[in-house]
Image 1 (cartoon, one colour):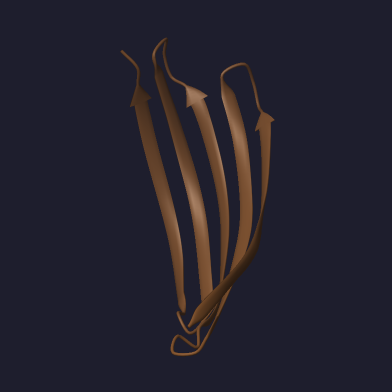
Image 2 (tube, helix red, strand yellow):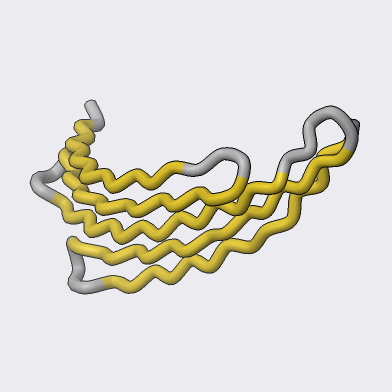
Length: 88
């Protein structure tokens, strides 16, 4: 069995202000297998992230993500993620 994977990713970042930034990601991966696996799946991911400095040592971010997979492994996922980071 052999699995071949091809894909691409596009990432764009923008500084919204001195303390805030925006990041946009789009990626796609195609997996094709031969032999026993007989895999044929495409996964697309789209993500938007906004982060900001909350204090001298604290950063917060919010991300939204949409994942779509079709083929042998089919699913859809929508996610909302929040993060607070503190550096001491």
